[in-house]
Length: 225
Image (cartoon, rainbow, N blue to C red; front, side, top):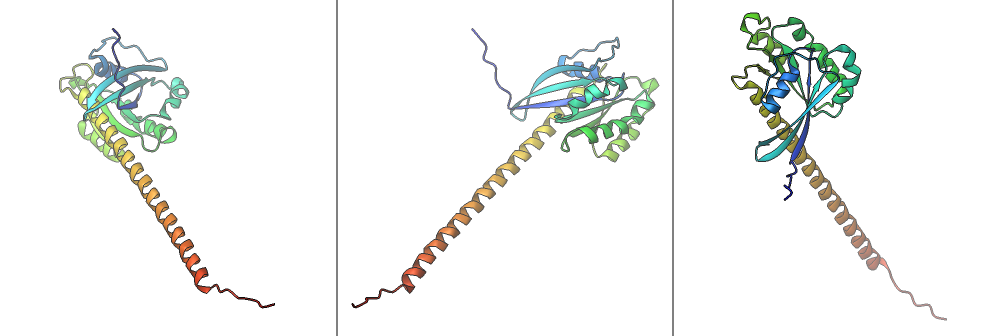
């Protein structure tokens, strides 16, 4: 007997971007499959995962796109910005250059992504305490500068579990954004219909008044031969 698949109420495309080696792939696999690979293999172009959640009584399908961080793949990954609903910017807390390059990744988003795309800043590899060079305070300051939400994670240990919390938070924010947009569209449509009805009524009244005016002012004349 075939199993009937339930269509999601919403489907969102989420990009993970940042320098090579910051842990984008590991974050994606930790959330999608609850697994962590010790060996590092650079992403070639694009990697892809799907995760279905139940959030706010809605079934939500997340399309997770893990992009390559190397400069040579930028022209390939740039096209994936265009219809993204959310973008997760990831840096490695043990690598200062990956944190400094967030400004460049932000410019890439400004140039290629939709204006209303949701952004989240994530400092990864928080488990490597003896090698941390980017503090929580610095991460928060950068997030405040760009007016985005901020999380610190560890795809390896995920003891919080901060990875799932971050993705659920992002999903809720996407739902709030889309539902608010739907309400605004509905209100705009209702307002437009109401205005059209008023115009039609005014026209009818004008025609009626014009007819009365003609009836009032017209006269019949008999001409004798």
